[in-house]
Image 1 (cartoon, rainbow, N blue to C red):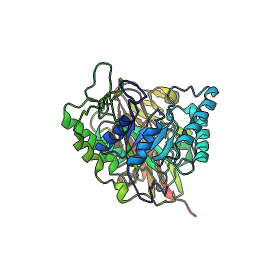
Image 2 (image 1 turned 45 degrees about the horizontal axis):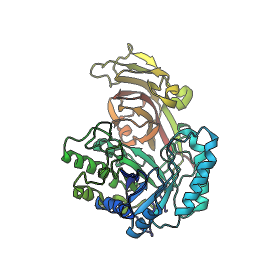
Image 3 (image 1 turned 90 degrees about the horizontal axis):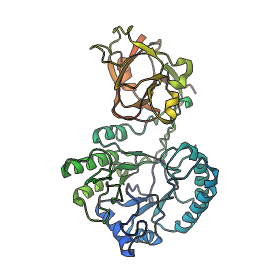
Image 4 (image 1 turned 120 degrees about the vertical axis):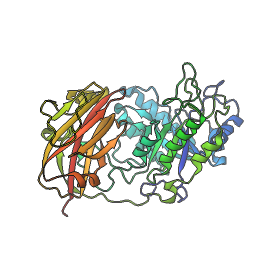
Length: 460
């Protein structure tokens, strides 16, 4: 590893992975023959993939043998689903079994990384950290990701990832081509809990999962495409967004074959082709930005002196009250001179959401839309950086003094920082300023909270 890149024999090989769960109609987790193991790799390669995340299964040694022979990259994974991580009794069995897996498979050159857990809850953090330390001791030659997706705890991660099943190529691109990496140049105050790792390799370890020919009891992600053209266009659009970002070293499409109730494979459960693989191969095999310009450099973050002009939950008394309405306001509501005296008052976070977030909400919001305004004073408009730290669920548009400074569809399900310096330079005024925000709720949980900061480079 060098900088934020994973190099293979000193070359930036973009990892075009597919999620492979290794299920078969007759044997479930047991392949009918050795030839079937080889054939699964060849079917994957026919689609343009050069490797796989071996998902929630310890694959047969013969599969790894064929991967070695065929030049197929693998991430080894432990079948961690269903463990009760709040019960310490699971720790020793998991660690013992994982040790056996790593010791058995570490001599296969096709294995390029280890992933001991998948989509784990917060209470798995201590066990994840122990397993990562043990894995590094057993095999210091390969990167380890503590868990694929969801809750990352390590202070010193080697690799980071996310799962994103957004089915809209445009908003997917806004997030992963235009919006990543976030704020690699300077460090934010620790209180926001925004983990910034611009010098750590990163990939999208699950995406796509486009449902096709979904029968009764089956499922895929998103609305089923109306026709094959829509499927190919969506597949290409989602994949292009990841191939176009030099800071992303790989992707993993869900998934190779249908399995039981999951009907989002590129092949049917019995390996019958569901699609013409030519357009899929063409979409994946184009050159990635990472291959042309890998992020091998390591830029040291600049220390900043930050001022919170608008505070979030993390800012304590700096988190001022917002004016808000839940019915559509008249035209001109984003302008500073708009009279919002009749609007209700409340403190962020606003929303209604399950899990840990629900306990943090201070103003309940359960309607489809909310419009918010807050005034603040800025005596010094000179700055080197301007960011918003935002948790939004769903679509959000932010204006400053009537000018748009940030917009994003869907949700982010956690506090993230976004660089808004260019737009803020055009909108920020000395003295009184007004932020105006519109959040639209689609389905599921809903949430809004933000901080607005400007900063100057810290004096050395």
